[in-house]
Length: 197
Image 1: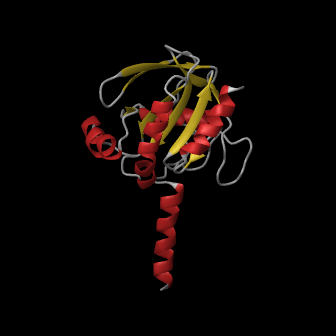
Image 2: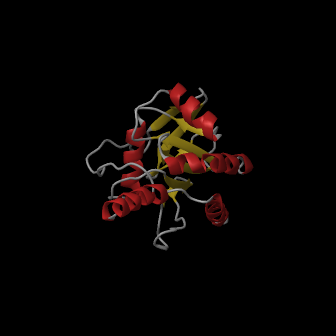
């Protein structure tokens, strides 16, 4: 009985917090200011991010708010929030660009389309590249995140600056990331505050 309680507890932690773990990014490669990241989505569309002032901007529209979502196609919370994120992107496409980066897995673009985008209505801009590790390392270093990363993990940037967002677990007013599945109402409220800055 005690063993069963431990197993159930571990499963609940994965469901409510996130999936996957990776060691810190202290000595891993990162992007530097001035670097351009040519990104191609799993369906072939292209954008360019510019590394600027210790953050990122969309080269073609630096005023656009970026939500960078680090996720895994295998991750149950990532799957569960995908359709809501797609809906949020569609409703906020004038001001916000959601970019998903696959992490902690090695799969093909077609696999992502067939087993994530199609199944979970996730047709926002998803990047599945070996360079994703470098992007993730850069984000973690930028915000000073030194713990093991779990997916889903999101950051929000405006004018190349990482924004403070709601911490649903610890109520830290200086929090600069979402971890685990996040209700889009929380994201929406944060984006509204960020837009008025």
